[in-house]
Length: 229
Image 1 (cartoon, one colour):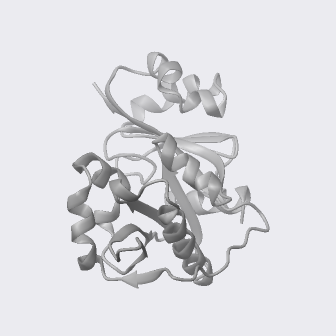
Image 2 (tube, one colour; image 1 turned 60 degrees about the vertical axis):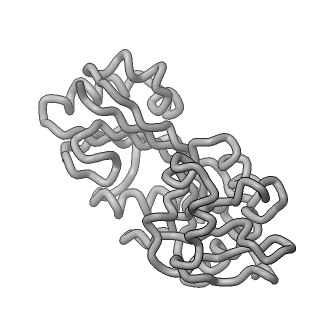
C-alpha cells in the first residue's frame, strides 16, 4: 500500500500508463474531475489534470508547471492563474494506508442493510448527508450503536473499478466525538483490506480529516475541480 499503490490506482482509473510528473489529459468525461470541468489531482507530489477541450491543454499545463503539488490544489493560488472559472469544488484531501498498515477486526460493530440507516439519514443535515457520500452506497454498511441501541455511526464503501474501496462515514449529531465513527470506519477498512482493496478516504471537513488520521491513514494528496466560466 502507500504512495505507490495510490498512484497506480489513479493511473488505472484514468487510463494512464502512470501518474508521474505533471500531466494534462484532454477528456471531458475524465474520472479525475466533474464532467466538463477542469480537474486537478495531486498524489505523492505528482500532478495530473483533466480538461474538457484541447485548447485548454497548454495553458493549464503551463500554469501547473510553475506550482508545487500543494499549490496546484489550493484554489486561492491556482484559480487566478487558470482560464476563468465560476465555481470550485474542493480541495478534498486524499488519505490512504501507509506501507505496512494493518487493522484488526472491530468487536461489536455490525453489518446493516443500507435501508436500515434511513433514521440516521433523517437525523443529519442535508449537507452532511451529501458530504458523506453514503447515499451512493447500495450494499451493507458497518454500524456502531450507542448504549441505547440507536445507530450512532455507519461507514461503507463503493468499490471503484481500479480496486479501490472509496470510504463514506456518517455519525449521528448526538453521538459525535464518542468514537463511533472511528469504530465503524475501522470495520469497513478491515473488510476492504480483506477483499484486497485499497482503502481511500476523501475529506474536505477538518473533522473528517482528523478522523482519517486517527485511523492511521496518511494524506498523500488532494483533488480540486473548477467549473469553466
